[in-house]
Length: 343
Image 1 (cartoon, rainbow, N blue to C red):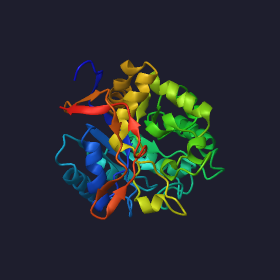
Image 2 (image 1 turned 180 degrees about the vertical axis):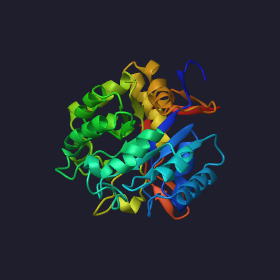
Image 3 (image 1 turned 90 degrees about the vertical axis):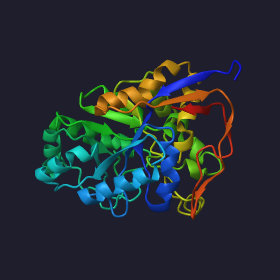
Image 4 (image 1 turned 180 degrees about the horizontal axis):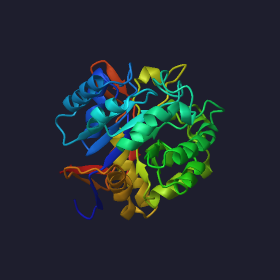
């Protein structure tokens, strides 16, 4: 190994992940479970996960797909206005949170919430607040695409004020306004993706369209990326890593009507180390990718240590399993860190 630089990550967590189902789950599940200790899994399947039976069955399918690794899937329910207190009390110990999607705003969210009025949401949110169940939100309106998250900020504020005991996670934030809101309310937290720390809309559509960088929420302006990156590099205590790694088959990305989602799971840790090293902030990376999430969600995990080495790694052009395939971010490119060992 000579004088090559090494870096260790302890119990890395991905607090926003899409694993899909069936053969796609069997393909992408192990690409996360190999290097992550655990992940918060999104419930927007078809149909969405709204019952205890569906939730437990999905968790078993995830565990089966990832059975070769020391990995804990933290599963979530798809938000509905009319969950009873009794139902939520019964399912509380099986879930890490409930995910709220505005209707039709992203992949498989057609049955999401049609009105974000506080009173419309009160029945379920009051029960969640009393039971200590966190609320994870895809925070976008249906306005102009670059302004959707910014326009959602007043909704976050109204929810934070109306339910002060409810832990609210602003998912995959993309704007400087969301970073500013973090410090305004005690019960607001956030996840941020790898790709939103790296790219702006210019990378997606400034030249030839880059379909594998097209995602929802869409990448924003340079000043937004700077705000996100500054908070991550300082390991802001209310900010967690959540990849929002969202696999779609190649033919659904490289087509007319390109599906939204960036697939980063197999390269996330390597690129994060590369990014934090570039900014001389490697001492903050364990907090950003592990400690913060453990504190926010009160998690205790079996020890898992990932040793990375500063050694070139060529990102595979495509990952395949049976009839499923997915193209990762940076496909075919070389990154400067590799996974050395997993213990």
